[in-house]
Image 1: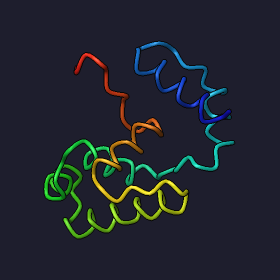
Image 2: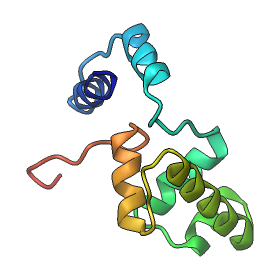
Image 3: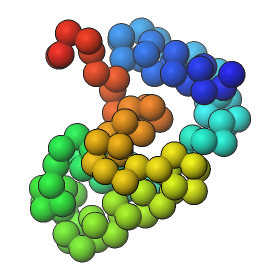
Image 4: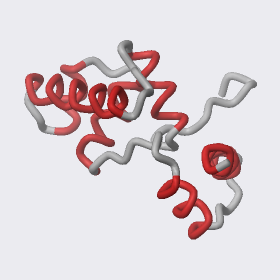
Length: 110
């Protein structure tokens, strides 16, 4: 299944191994549950889902706190529309890992 291909690609990349780019891209394109985000929304998701506050994300990105909050809501709506709700920050973190926006955590805690 395409989702399994994406998961394997993310695990391979997280381990530092090369990922066959065309296969990975094809798997993403064929997965209707994958949430594609423009670069600015990805930046906000990565910082926020990794534990950053709205204020921290705003400071790092140069956006206003209001814009960061609006972007987080847009990201949540995109996941909702893909039937992958992310109502909490922890859920956003999980979705970001699933979609390859954040690295998969290692089992040894590092």
